[in-house]
Image (tube, rainbow over all chains, first blue to last red; front, top):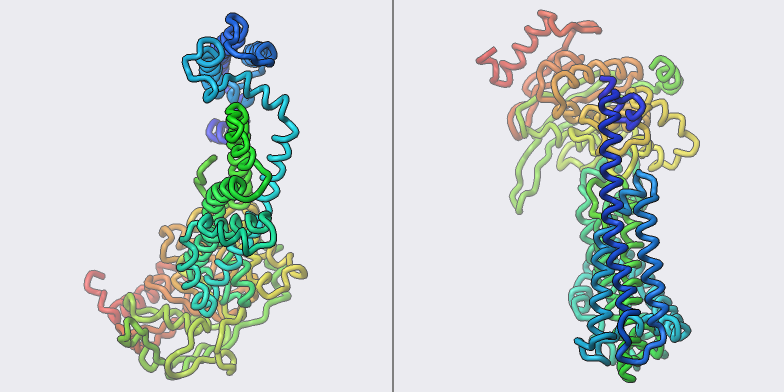
Length: 345
Length: 264
């Protein structure tokens, strides 16, 4: 009983028998040795990347080759030091888990460097080397930052409006037969239409391209959120309603304390789908109508055949979209702690 | 437990009388009427513990839904202390076969549900703690339902009902899905809660032994559509003993009424 409870409560380390403690120390040492080896491998590929920048001359005229090489060496050194010196524990395990990916990343960057800047195996204007992209981040930062800001603003506004409207509509359809009667056919007729199909109309109906894009993003977000919220409300077991009613619940209580919490897992699926749909609309709207944002930046870069700028903007865009989804999933994990076995993003 | 009982003691309101008067009910299944209750009449005196026994699917649980006010009967009427039952009201609380705890609420929040729904939770928080003490789950107040065993979940459901000080406690096979040891422990628990608080109890069960052990009166129903086949007083004092030959005799008689005494 005592060993059982000790190991369960996680307080067991101090009470472990000696032989077990020795074994644990041996396994800790083994883990550290493996981590250092993996760290050296990752450091090696990053050092190779840095060396590949300096060893041969560039085919083109890029100003950031040396800075890139220094950066690569710094990463290599940092990785080796962290792998060797980080104390064992959760942080150490996290590092160990990421080292193989870091190793591969260093190798890919080195190959990319050789294939573009040094030997030109990949045709040049279309496949810029890493230092060209670094150059965009250092030299074109104001324009890129302004684009990011414009995109985030547009996306946030449209998504918030669409999510709120979709949630309220979904709850209303789920809770009221009358609302369902009138809204459901409209939803079936308009919902499946891709939001981008409204683009031409939206841009002359709305007073500004910004409001038109906000509307389209809200539309793309709202449809999945509405449908999933509705199905979530419908999926709440009638037994919960019965229990609440026998305890004296009003209709308002049944909606806010039974239907909505029960529907939340579905709502988050809808919010996730809506987020994906809204990214697509955002980029298209910026490419066609709005004169700002990352989509516009991409379009502009293509017009000037500035391919390095395109890749730089794509990388930023991917980080932003991934960050938004991470934020959504973190919010969900917080709100739905009561659920078992949720997917980790 | 003693302290918790003391906390509950001043709020003992006693049981209410229940009258079921010529109630008939039917389900509408794809346009076809399926009769489930046929002209059922009985009364329950305040503080009585009445068990309803009958074959599976005979309409006992439907009767409980009518008592709770979740549905109106197609014919006849029900009343609590002479007042017709037209809608659910927290003086008549149901404990269902499944605990149906809200998975997104902690144990404490589940027990607080009724007080919150009635808008009196802020004043009456202590009652939630007392109810949790009463069923012995004070330590689990912050647990979520999926972390509880079946018996613990059903005890939370019981606390969620009792915190409203019901005058009629409606028990719809509340112990049906529990293992036999937990069931025996909870039968004793329900009995002591009933004796302490004095509410009227209406229990649907399949377990003849449970009915005989708990109830002051047993009503036996026929097959669907249910009519009353027999009413049996259980004239034995509490605490009862499960091995009491008088109870065993009674059990035999009831099993005979249900047509299941062949192997006994």
